[in-house]
Image (cartoon, rainbow, N blue to C red; front, side, top):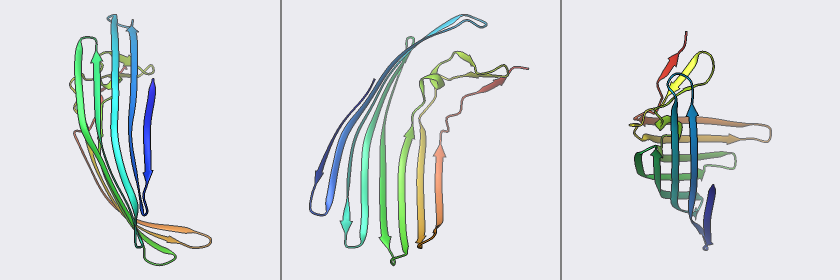
Length: 177
């Protein structure tokens, strides 16, 4: 079940947007290969957010932040994740054809239910994946500086990026030979 409430308020030179997203799911999986196992998975994923954007002179900007609250239950194991998610975006025209922009994002990537499940799942005759109930949240810092050149017939970009990912989420893979 997915739901969202959102409210937008416009001002003279800016706009404020606030909202709440919620996703609830329940899964009951039975695995019969090897040791028979049943996984009862529940998740409640919430995101409370606000963003404010506008224009000051020729400078366009948007600032956003929010709180992700993710509650997961795998059989009797319960995990709670509460993380901030923030962003900043600015853009400035250098001429009619040339624009300079910068974007920053801090994004936590929360483990999915299958990544948290300890059950082995067969994807094909060669690949078996097993989750990890002790996974941590992946942390992503994204920075991007971009120079855009726009002409009547083409668009060109020059992009400089620095991205950092810590505590990378990747489930262990087993190959059945």
